[in-house]
Length: 205
Image: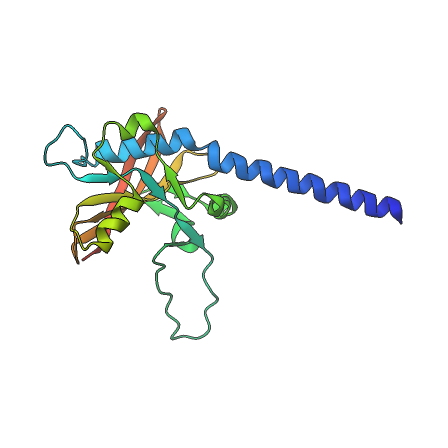
């Protein structure tokens, strides 16, 4: 009996260590890709966010977490699945094939859900921040509290396919009051470089 308990303890300890290692890899191993995706979006979407431009728009240096949800079961024929304000349903990502290009397949489902372990916010690297008219979530909140109008972009932490060759990100633009819009962006890694493949406006105010 003692041997059985001992083996169960060892197995649980091993699994716990593996999970911690996996979470560590998810939060740090993707840093290079995340920063490359940020740069790709800024440059390829021609965002006017560089500090050298006098009329540049602020860019939030902290990426926000994109929550990935499992949708509730359909209860009746009138059931309507409302979009999530702070994330996206896994069913909106998997499977994803747009204009003949596959971004996410069923094999990516678990890996996408594991990315819910991403931090609530993630600061982009200093080398990028130094080039931008950068702001932070804290500064944005203070301006909102003081009812100060401001123009800024805010981006989610990109989520990746299992092979890390596809990425999905949301980009919001706020220009004060009810002014603003948001885009969803799908990227592919082609010859080692991230490229925007598909982009469309998801909301406007």
